[in-house]
Image (tube, rainbow, N blue to C red; front, side):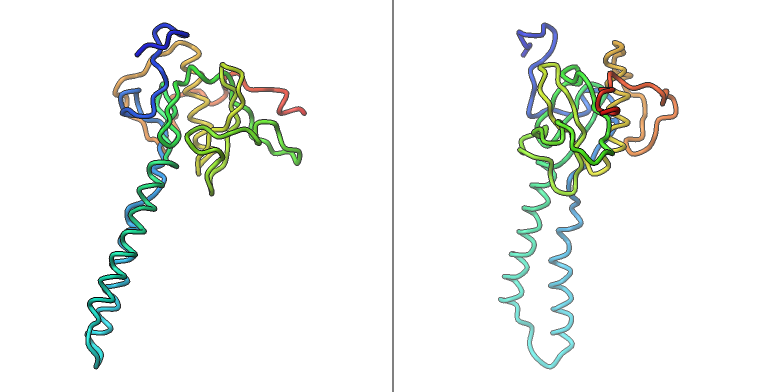
Length: 206
């Protein structure tokens, strides 16, 4: 459905395929399924110890622990992959289940290395969470609506670099490359590294 405020632009969507928006430039899944295997491995170790000992194997108790540990891990990983995952494509940025077009971003604020906090560091985070998730670092953005907000990721410097280059391409009117291969976790040597889109110079000098 078209956004009546911006003809030709689709409304922000909470769902949709990341790949439909162009090449994936950066991705963090938010959680790894291998964590789910910890519970079964612990139960298997206990069964092995009891099987080699003089007593019997306590199947009812072990079964309960198996269900509790595995179920808790499944819920945690699923929630993490839903709400703290990140995906940047050539045209969109998804944070959790919320996706915004890069055309909604006006400027990317420089990283704050000064002792005094910047205004964007207290802004709300992109996505459905009110703040930047734990063990993630925020990246200050000003949207075209004038709102201050924060993108976020574990590898925030890589996201900043990729987002800066992708936003520059959008501002220059360059469309998706459509199928060009790209390593989401590594640098793209084909892009210039000395250009940045509309950075807020006042943040660097204040």
